[in-house]
Every structure is written in C-alpha cells, then in structure tokens.
Amino acid sequence: MVEILVLSEVADGGLAPITGELLAAGRTLGSEVGVALLGEAPAGVTDEAVSRGADRVYLVMDPLLDD
Image (cartoon, rainbow, N blue to C red; front, side):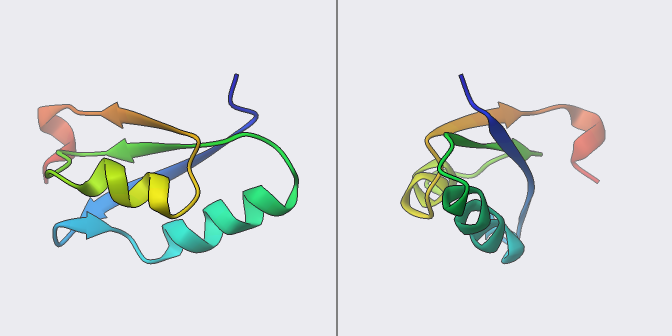
C-alpha cells in the first residue's frame, strides 16, 4: 500500500518539474511513494515517474482533465 501519494500534472509531454522533488521528499520519509498522473499520459511518462522514484503509478484520465 502506498503511504505517500504525489499528484502530478502531465505537461508538455512529460512530468511537471516539481514532481521529481516531491517524490524525493517522500523517499526521505522512508515510505512507499506513489504518483497519480492527472490527464492524458503520453508514452514514457509512467517510466519517467518510476525513474524519478515512484514505487507505483496511477493514471487518472478524464476528458475534463484535458484542458
């Protein structure tokens, strides 16, 4: 079970820059860290989230999030 969840926007084909900082901060707490990607996630963004420290990635997609 994820103990810390970071909410992140997908912008310009990648993760918002603050996402990596938030994942690193969560890591310092020694807990499992997940990231919820809001909006349509292009290929490779989930891999980017894992490479930045996410243990789990949740995709939250809805047409209302596209704007």
